[in-house]
Structures are given as C-alpha cells and as structure tokens.
Image (tube, rainbow, N blue to C red; front, side):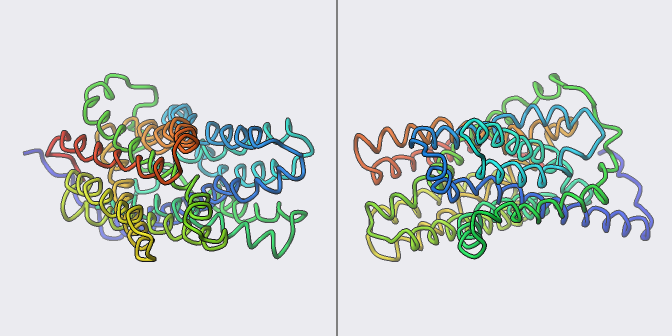
Amino acid sequence: MSASAPALPATQAAARFRTGAATLILLSLGHFCVDLYSGSLGVLQPMIVGRLGLTLAQAGLLGGILVFSSSVTQPFYGFLSDRHRTPLFSALGPMVAGLFILSGALAPSYGWAVGLMVLGGAGVSAFHPQASAWAAAGMASHRARWMAVFISAGTLGIAAAPVFFKEFLAWFGPGRLLWAALPGALVSAACLAMVRPPADFERRARSFDWQALSAVRRPLAILYFGVFFRSAVQVVFAQFLVLYLSRERGYSLHQAAYILTAYLAAGAVGGITGGHLSALLGPKRVIAHSFLWSAPLMSVFFLTDSPWGVAFLVAGGLVLLFTIPVNVTVAQRLVPSQAGTVSALLMGFAWGAAGMVFVPLTGWLADHTSLHTALMALLVFPVAGYWLSRQLPEDLAE
C-alpha cells in the first residue's frame, strides 16, 4: 500500500477549497454561456435565411460549419491547453463565442456569416478542453460530482438556448441581438481576474504524451465510443425533435420547442445525478445502467401517442445523460497528464463526430421512411453502448 499524502493544515485546506470552488463556479457559468451561444443557431436560422435569402442547403452548411469549428477541433485546443500555462483558452471562450456567433447572425453576406461562425465556434472549442480539465481539479474528493455540476451547466445552456433567444428577439428585436453577448463578456472578465491553473499543473507533462495514452488505450477507446453512441442519440434528437413533434405528432411549434427544452434540461439533471451515483455505486455500474434503461424508457415515447409518452422521453433523456461527467472524470484520471486532450476527445470530438455523421444520415433515412422510423432506429445505440460498457475494467477510479 502506498503512503498517503500528508494532510494539509485546516486553514490551507479551506483556502484551497475556496479557490477550487470559485474556479468551479466561474467555469460552470462560462460553460453555460458558451453552450447557450453554440445552441443559438437553431433559433436564429430563420432570421438569417430571411435576411440573406439563403437556401436550406446553405443554412444547413452554416450549422455544420459551426459544429465542426466548435466540436471537432477540440482535441487541437486540448493539446495546446495541456502544453501552455495560460488560462486564456477558457477565460476568453464565453466572450469570443457570444460576440462572433451573434455577429454571424447579423452578417451582411453569407461569406461573412461563415467566417464569423468559424471564429465563434473557435471560442466554444478552445473553452471546453481546458475548462473541463480545470473545473474540478481544485476539489479534493468526489470529482465526478463536481464535474457533473460543470458539465450540467453546459447542458442547461443548450437547453435554455431555444427559449432564451426566442424571447430575446421577441422583446428586443434583431437589432439589439449583440447585447445578448454581454453575459459571456462579463463571465470572461471574471475568469480573467480569478481563474488560475490547478495547483499540480506545473507537475503535469507539457507535451503530447502518446505513451501515457497508449497505456490505457482500451478503456479510453471504450469510453470514447460510449460517448459517441450516446451523442448519436442526443445530437440527432436535439436537431429533429421539434420537426418530428410538429410534423408527425400534431404539436404546435411552441409546444414542440418547450418539449425539446424539457428533454435537454432533464439531461442536465441527469448529469448531476450520474455524478452523485458514480460516487456511490462506481463509474462502470452507472455507465452500464444508463445505457440499459434509457432505451426502453425512450421506446415508450415512440410506441404511444399519449402525453405520458413525452414524460417517458424526458425520463429517458435524464437517464441517458448520467454518463457525461462520469466518462470525462474517469478518462482524466486514466491520463492525468493529458487531461485537456482526453476531455476534448470525449466532450467535443465525439459529440461533433456523431453529429456530423448521424444528423445527415438520419435526415436521409427520414426522407426514405419517416422521422418516426429514423429517430426510433437510433435507440439501437444505447443497446450497443450497454454491451460496450460491460467490457470496461472493474477497477475504474471515481
């Protein structure tokens, strides 16, 4: 048995907790903001299409460019943030995301809109790896619980985006849209003033360590594909649920938007719940049972037309997202020297890759069958995720 680390004096431990808690709160607020802005395009697209006279193909390409810039590029920023000391990656993310994504919605031409969305997505992408590596690093124990707070803040941002920007435009109009970037700018200013690298940051490797990744490549690959399968369901549902409810289930657009918000908000609650359950039951059990129970719960929604079906959909979304903080925390503990890189792989790259593959594939399948069939077919992924999670080692750290 290895010797335990000497206990910190009470005053020093309390000061370290306050610093860690302040960092967690600020980065969680930043996560809410960057995901709020990254989720704004779905609401702002009708305005952009009308102003610039875009085709649906051009509008879809604009969304794909934002997904690529904000998600798929995250491993690059994870590599940079693991190597450099500066907190600018996470501190500036909320301001950059808000200013450029909302400016893109007001762009005078399609070319300008594309360029501004790329820059705004870069703010989102730069924020996530470093912030996810630092958010809970100052907390002495139960990091999965604290990571759940950080990650669920982002999920709440995505959930709030449809309602927030719909109401903002209704109250203030498109001409004042840039004022919606103010919360992100204020959070960035606070992060610049207060967020500092974790205490053990200087001891971490400051270059890409392939050997450390290779040593745990099997559990890391299982975690990655588990996130990929979960994201295939979550991203596609977020993209098509309003359209499905309004076209094939008879809901108004207003009702459908609020059902989507409830579904996404339940995922945020699920992330917090999963973090707590991981501390009690262990990561492997939480990951496996999340996949096991989400599929039958969501199946009820597709097999019944009653309002209770929506309740089962929301419950399924809650259970499906138990795994977000658990996966990230386990990956960071497997490769602590590359915390930003593995966080980017699991949070950004897997999410973006699933969206880029399955959003168009689901649309193609819906064109040849129906949205009902195409969306229900996605429930094969939680089943595959359950089988995959059973292959994880039993001794995963919490």
